[in-house]
Image (cartoon, rainbow, N blue to C red; front, top):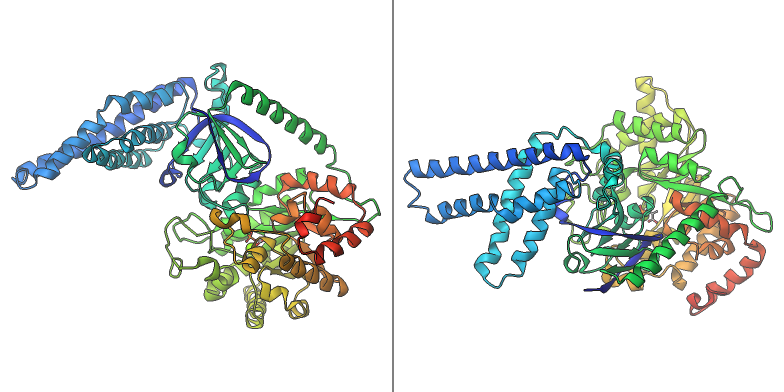
Length: 588
Ligand code: PEP
Ligand code: MG
């Protein structure tokens, strides 16, 4: 049955493929393809896991028998029987084989996919007793997964695309896959960065949620905030993801498939055309040179940044190094190596390293592992610099690592979420202390330019304070909009109120840019607004000359710049600033 789900448009273009529904709790299961001659080994791994779990259950049953407690615990004994039965269930076994043999999924992926198929059938059962068997099935699958985790696959993840290509003589295997999940944390998304998926859909999330930001950095079509997509879409359904319109079309008609196939090809032609701008300097019609920098999440993203023609990294979100590690944070040496890789990767171009910004919609891990991670209002809680100042030893280790990386190239040190003079003072004291510690150790480090993010209205309203202490400012519009309008950027229920051109936001942006320029200090925008082509002219008109965005957006923004005349835009931007409904003027 065809239907359409609406969500938030996250990233460019169209993806057409079959749905892979992944339960949020199982996104950490490896997803990769195996070659045709590896399928037998994958089935054998599953067989071993199933046998091991069955033996375990039989042992427990025997134990109960010896204690004479089979009679004392008739429910437990019956439950174990149910588990044994589920493990031998024909639908489970044949379904898993199907995903491995016909689709070339690795064993864990095949198992969790089939689990999702059967779990849905349980959900639809009328009989509450049978409905509850879903939990039993989940338990036995979990035990098999645990067993398989202990026995590493002989085929490891990096083969993904090669295996796919290898198997591509089979047309079924050649179909692109799109991932549909209720929720994916930013760390989960990162895990999927090198994955087999051609597109993403999540039920929750706003346009500038960090999950959406990582999806954008992957440069594949994605829609977030699609509410109940993960329930409505079935495993293996055909879906079209329109990442520009924020629409997911499920089981589309042949006419729609043809229409979107055409759009997809048009998008590719447009991208090809844009790629010719890579080496063209970003200069406006009236000769203003604009700096287009890249936002990165991992050191290796420097490759994409250079490829897109970025003139530096304007925002390295270092928190991604800290996530998904069960609270065990990277030490100074590990961080130093990562920052150094990014700096060297940029081949002499400046790299702006932002100190860690965990908290809010960027938890360290799926479940809170550190004190203070489970606040009621995480976006207003211990986040970013607040978190760093609460743990000076951790912060000092990061500062030392960044200062050491600065010996290998041009580094800017950027501090997120500052609002108070006392936070600025403490930060500066700790930067000095980090230098002293390195001096005492006799360790080499380099000079850094110090920058502050302006992303809290209180900061935007006290710019002179920041200009006294910092060499440059970077406006984080994602948070500045969130905090100015009291709109949770990760909550799809209020996404319609997330308005980058609200007069209050524009006032704060305009005055921050103007004050920096008046003092000859550098100012950039590194929020998602900088990479939104519908905002480029306005930002130019407000006087912005440095933009930082995902590498995938650089060429489209450059195209806008090449067509712009800043003198004319300045006059127009002033009228937008004082308009009651600025959005109405944006199309002018
Ligand atoms: C921002 O808030 O605009 C920003 C760039 O930081 P982040 O998105 O990582 O919060
Ligand atoms: Mg921010």
